[in-house]
Length: 478
Image 1 (tube, rainbow, N blue to C red):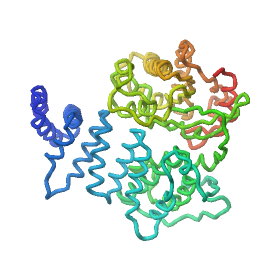
Image 2: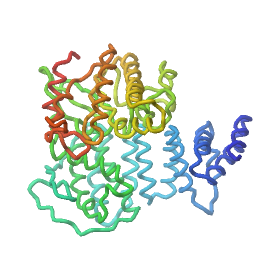
Image 3: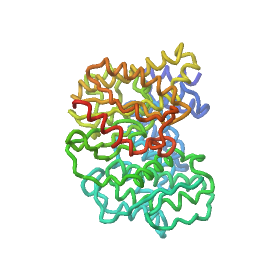
Image 4: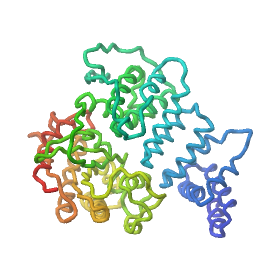
């Protein structure tokens, strides 16, 4: 009933009453979808943030916990700009909170504001005084330059890393040095969040081309990471840990030191963009640099016109398309103007997406009877992506290449094979898109992922780039 009253207040433009009612509804039932949607709308309205500040202005109590919760509500409904402002409010109120710093960092990532993401992490670690890995983080970031700048991508210090495979203790170490097992520590939630902030900073350094600093950060963090008595993939920071470990392992396997190249190819996709990032390939007498354009957690399904989940917002920030575009209606664009896109006009873009759809999207949708069959679900989901990619190719004058969905997991390989077969047919029928035919070499005679291409159980080993991707690109005209 409270949600209904809030909707009536909204209809009569009584904004203060609407916000008060919908906040009450969210407090009474934090999982109520209608209340959460209504709260996101009310806070995101023009003047909504200021109205919220007035309603939560109690000098006797910190509003940070409530503000951080409402930020999550706004983010989940695509209002990422407002979510970032709310999280900045919470972090300003409690600067010692690693949780608020982490969530602010992630909000800045979604907005494609990696400089802001770095500053969110730096502000948290800057409070440290006594020597520790906290102060090591700040020493590594000192003098880093602006994200993506020449200063950011260079460093007077560097290390050479190697990956040590050990049961339950795989880790990176400076080449040629011992790596004794550390004493185990039971990390509390705050300590885990602090680790997660550092893991995320390492990923941001890597994405911006700060590879030397990323390697130094891996060196600094590995002892603390390995010391956790609970495996970190079983904790609340498993996602940050997974990204960090992928980055660390890629930096061990392939330094990516080559800086001479002819052209950039922007690799746009989910976490599978980490292994190709900054690799320079020899393709038909040209040196092509693979530049990352990460969109964390993006599914093809998220790109549907009516979608509002935040990975879609992240995708269009990366692509540089906003509500000023003539594609606004066709793509269902929403949110503020994009100021710092990753991918410029007239670029060559390699899309590397779809693995999450195969892993957790389509089967669940079939079980919920959204589709009559897996095949129908695949056709519909893949068609969403092909429609979006072709429209972007025309609008941005991109040369768009489509990478096959990687067959990395045994459990979903059958789904991946079906999905790729349908996706390729759709791509081949679209004049704006070109299929990159590198899938044939991924599997061994038993239909498993060939051992040569295995990295961490989830991502492809970067050696596939020279041996499979480069030859496939060499057969194309672009």
